[in-house]
Length: 508
Image (cartoon, rainbow, N blue to C red; front, side):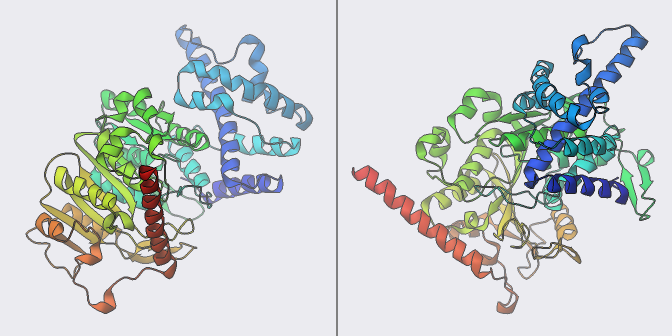
C-alpha cells in the first residue's frame, strides 16, 4: 500500500530532482530506476550471501572482492564529493557486468548513464531511495506505479500512457489464465503486463489467503492477494516465461522491466525492437508468428512509415503506412489460432473510408472472430491527447456471428485535463454486461450494450462505429470536440497526400 507518508517521500524525491535541474519526468523516473537497480543488486547479493552461509552452496557473485565498494550498502555512506565520482565512474559502468546474469533488465542497464551532476542531489536521492520499501512485495509495485503516474507528458508518434482502469477493463474482458503466454508489441512502461500479473494474483487467491492492510493515516483498507492457488509450475511460468514486451524506446523498456520485476516477475522477456519491421521476424521468430495466447496493446497512433521499412507479411494483409492499422495486422500475426486480443484503436480505424481501413475491418470480421467494440469517451487519454478511441476485442480464426457493442460514456474520471474521480462510471456495468452477454437478449439499440449481426455489419460497409448502429435520439448522440473533428480531417488529408505520392512514384 502506498500510504500518505510514502507518497510524501516520493513527492519530496521528485521535488529534489526538479530543484536539481532535472525536470523531464521520464528522465527523473529513469534515474530513480537506475538507483533502485543499484540498491536491488546489493539486496540480492546480501540474500545470496546469507543463503550461502546457511547452505554452504556457492553462487555467482555480482561484486568481486575488489568491487565491494560499489555496493549500495557501501557507497551510500560516502560524503557528497566522494559519492558522485564513485557512482558515476564505477557503479554505473559496473552495471554492464550484470549482463552476464542473463536477465533482460540487466541487458538494458549496459548503457545506463548517471544524469545527476550535483553531488548534493545524488546524496539526497540515495538517502531517500534507501528509505523506500523495495523489499516489500506488494508495496514496491504500488510504489513504482505511483512514480509512473507522474508521467504527464505525451511522447512522440502518438505514445502516451494508458490509464490503469482502462487497462484493467481490457484484462477483465479477456480473463487471462496462469498458463497463457502474454504479449504487448508496444509495451511502453509495461502497464498491460503488470495488470495481468495483478489479475492473476486476485483470481487465484482463496478468500482465507487475502490479507487486508489499513492505512493508519487515511483508514482506507487495501486487499493484498497472495496467489496461494497458483501451483509451482504456474509460478515458474509467470516469473520467467509468461510475459513478453517489445518497444523501440530503450528508456521505456528499462522502466517496463523494472515495473514487472517490482511486481514479482523475476525475468520478464522485454526487448528493444520495432515490431513492424522485418527485423522482428528475423530476431524473434517464435514471438513474431503465432506465439501468443493473449495480446493486450495500445499501439502508437498517428504514425506513418515508409513501405520499405514495414515487414512484407504485414503489407500483404493490409496495404498501408498507418501504424494503427499495421499493428492490428501484426497482432493477428502474433496470435496463436484461438488466441485473443483487446487492442485500443483511434475511432478512425472503426469507420475510416480508405481502402486500407476497410481492408483491415474485413480481415477482422470475415477471417477472424470480432467479439466486441467498446466505445470510449474522447477525454479518456487527457491530458495526453483528446483523441476519440475504442477497444477492439477479437479472436484469431473462428467466425464472426454477432458483435457486442458498448457505449462507455463515463469512466469514473472527469473528462477534462484534471481527470479527477467522479461518481459516473460505466466500466463496472460494461464488464457485467459483457460477462452476461446474450445476442438473443441484448437487442435494444437504445441501451449502452447491444449486439449487431455480422450480416448487418457487412451490409453497412463494415462500419464498426457504435453511433452508426445505436438508436439514440438526436439529443443523446455523442459529438466529438472540434479539435477531434479537425484531427480527422487532417488524417483524411494526409491519406490523400500519401495516395498521391504513391501514385506519382508508380508513374515515375
